[in-house]
Amino acid sequence: MSLILKNILLPLAAFNLEVNAEIQGRVTAIFGPSGAGKTSLLELVAGLRSPKSAFIELNGRVLTDVSQGLFVPTRHRGVGYVPQDMALFPHLTVRQNLCYGQKSGGDKAPLFTFDRIVEVLEIKSLTQRGVTELSGGEKQRVALARALLASPVLLLLDEPLASLDRKLKARIIPYLARIRDEFGVAMLYVTHDRFETLALADEMIVLIDGKVAQTGPVREVFSRPANLQVASLFTVETILPGRVVKNENDLLTVAVGSSLLSAVPQALPANSSAVHVCIRAEDVVVARDCDSPNSARNHLPAIIESLAREGPLVRVELNCGFNLSALVTNQSCEEMNLKSGDNVTAVIKAPHVHLIPR
Image 1: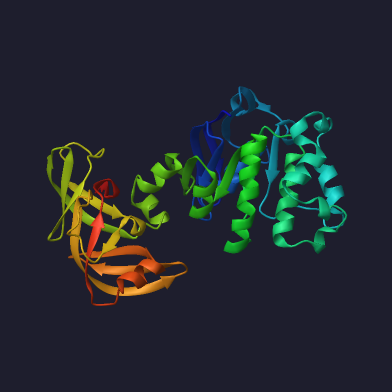
Image 2 (image 1 turned 90 degrees about the vertical axis):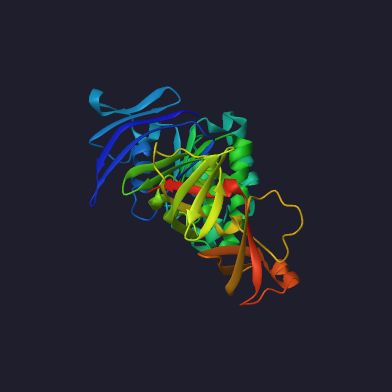
């Protein structure tokens, strides 16, 4: 899939949505806080908004070109759209909702037959029921099925799991993965949920206040945020001021207070030593004894300040000359008998120390 978004300009209440991006991934997450312009961008691709400026091209076919007065109507764009409210018709049965969205001739494409789609999304038993009789998860699957029955080239999903609790999200995500893998339909997936993004997307665009803050492969963007705004959005637990004091043997030495950390060389401005040091809690290992061989470059003596249970994990707040957060499993916490006031070692690999210029 190739989607070109060029010279996008859409005035919104608080700011202008301004986007230039080229999307190639199977599933691309449009990630950002509420009110960042994510839904508006999806609506532009769907042809539901008229921008001040835009060039939108899907797989070599121009959908919108304001400069040429070209605007392909929504129904002819080859996209399937699942809005946040799912837009199911409450006065129709599930089958009637599905047939309403079915593209004429869609049954000629083996992947997009009615029977195939209701089988994959496991909704055959629901087809005679009314929409008001469905659970949240069932409604979500019906909305996905209706969008797929339009035989789309691109599926637009606007925070499809936002109204579901974590347990129900975990049940729906495999259905989305099956759509991705079995139907081969590219997706633009609007979300502000890290779990959903990591589970489904291979590329991501980070939107903040209507501007593209960062793009790239999902895991790379999450592990190496481009600036403090993005780092805060991703809830990087430890963000501290630091200073690069040495660069040798393919390692940077960074001073954080009275402590020294090793990091791999990163794209920093020339002759710039002032940095923000970013460390994710999941990248910190808490150890009782670090005398055994370990490839990690950073071994910091620390005192446990507090422990807090977070589902299957325990958040451990450490003092190692600076405040540092770590996440360990409940089992590890029990096996090491971790308690407030204990002396431990915080172990961090050099690639997990991310630096942002100050």
